[in-house]
Length: 460
Ligand SMILES: Cc1cc2nc3c(=O)[nH]c(=O)nc-3n(C[C@H](O)[C@H](O)[C@H](O)COP(=O)(O)OP(=O)(O)OC[C@H]3O[C@@H](n4cnc5c(N)ncnc54)[C@H](O)[C@@H]3O)c2cc1C
Image (cartoon, rainbow, N blue to C red; front, side):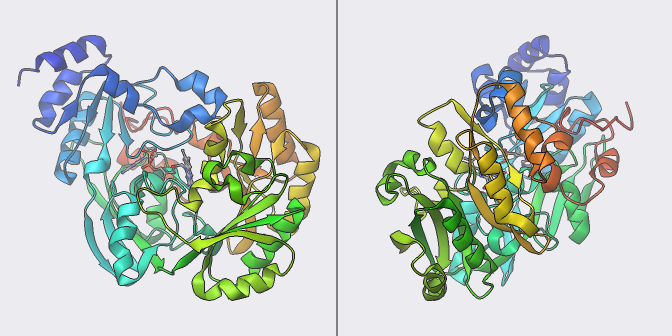
């Protein structure tokens, strides 16, 4: 087939046989205009001043938008045959430059694969490009919802969460995606001349968990569900940040109290909370919480007189509303960045056996430089805190020193200022042989090249 004029122009500007690739994929829709392609080759890497410098000019050559799995297979085959890099993009909300195509090539927009295949009590099977908000909207009428979601639930996809995220709202009860049982199965397409479609069930599904799309193109996922409680959003304020930590810890340990979110944040973080600022009095530290309505009385008994409730309302994430969880997890950082671009952040995991002492130790070490924002979670069956502290940024050397000091004191860091899996994922990484699996499913190393830096292509 003769390449179209657009494809011919692309080919002239590309290192790859893009024209041949587009001819091979036939009528699968493509986007070729350079401005659009460049814009959609980005994600939220700009949170990191380091990644912003490294990634700001990177772009794919073309975007391909498959309508179904058959289209995905055609694109995978064409890229393998023509040795064209292929990077999957979904909602584009990742923070580590995960969906940024370092080597150009094809950007595969997977959001067309969004069908809910089936649901039954406790389980749903969906296209990988389905938005998490849409999944909840379809399962809630039957009394179920996703066990956990990132604070980007309204714009991110389930496939992007599994391939790039780690946990979020709900992880205080269910832990993160890496915990056994939190991904039931994944269907993937391999990148070979004759692509295979593999169903990965149970432990095998961990091979695609937080692999940044380097170990196969996920087309469908089977995800466990949780009872959809009527949730109550709460803001509780405290004189002392460590009182907030202790209340959060007591509530997190109380297995009889059904909760979805427990987020302590030190003042001045709430200063940047726009519409909710009125519920966050000057100088007071906060917990943002989501508690199941039937557990509210028990939660309040745990709180006692240690803090003051300034906001209490049924949870609402209707389209026109900015839900409470969009002030937690990495949205906390975004709320501050909306007003001030001089800060950045870290991603930490505190040791469960000396949690509050460890948070206090780090706070004392960098009192006005690293501001605690913690998220109660379960990790390998223990209650602890993940954290996304706000960092007042000065320079890279100081940032690396802060990271090293955390690690030296037993606080694990999944460094959000690097783009490789090996350096960035750490405690968030799944317990699976992703490197070995990549040799089977992506022998030419075409999937999101540069992100799994230890991979050497099995074939040329
Ligand atoms: C404000 C803000 C808050 C956030 N909060 C959280 C949070 O609470 N918890 C959390 O875990 N993350 C969080 N994130 C990161 C991100 O939003 C989530 O991980 C989200 O689930 C990513 O989904 P996405 O659809 O945007 O994926 P994308 O950003 O498009 O992709 C993420 C990665 O997955 C790969 N990928 C996507 N789809 C597929 C597929 N079908 N097959 C193979 N690979 C695929 C991409 O190549 C990329 O490497 C946050 C980010 C921002 C900007």
